[in-house]
Image 1 (tube, helix red, strand yellow):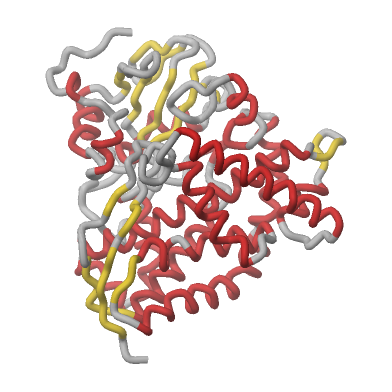
Image 2 (tube, rainbow, N blue to C red; image 1 turned 30 degrees about the vertical axis):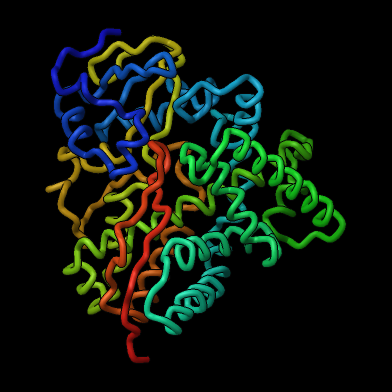
Length: 409
């Protein structure tokens, strides 16, 4: 493995969270995709990794779990400690086939078309309730007052979490996954303390559900059998924590970026106001434009070739979705936001084995939110520059103050 001598490439540091806090460094990703799409990237805190920015390479790695493993060292950039790796391997995001398919099958029972259809009316009503509160004033902090509440409601409904507990679980999941940001997790202990509290909460839920099964996803997990045995309490707790975090973080991020993107493209927003039937395509383009997750990792299981480069067994491979989502080989005028773009092969939900379980729920949530929002308020403006998350993993917005006028009913 040798580092490139291209003058621009040596200045690129995708591990620098302060760069991503200012916004996605598309100039860097464009250079990499053009000059060195399978790029050896050194790291100050690790062995280095291959950075993938081309759509086809991300697709190949995502759909080749035998060659590119989630199990070997987990899906995150830094090598986890042995005990953390063992825990990661107990949830679907850190599994390879065949275990991945078996455990994914358990959780997928909560995301069937029938379940989503049953949830849709309730979700529509909850979205109308949350957005309806905007009628009482002419300003809000969009992330916490709107974007965070709807996905937390959805995953809590599926999991059977009582309404009184949902806000605390949102705070804990935020501290757990966004631990690169010193404001969200001021000390290294913050994330660990959040993990411990969620563990304790999940254990209490398990006791309640076993005594009085509710038919929720929590019940399904507790009753399910894998290879003739039920999940251990530890396995269930890890699943609970993963689902609460995954079900809440990404859709909140997509909702926040969706509004910001529409504010940056007022013509597109006006088209959606005039023709809400364009909303499904707009949601796909929002996801392409600002993927909620910047990257995931795989580990090569053998020596192999990828994109003309020789990858060694054990090498880290990172798939950069903001790069693959703007690959000109796949997307015409990739840096142009088009709500009617078709086809739209955005990779923000992943591809292959680890395609996002909650993709259809996320799409439904985003369609309902923006349809309701644009029908309720108008003349939306930023009251201050949005504050982004200090993270090169989560494409988060921490705060977005907006003003608006309420539409006549």
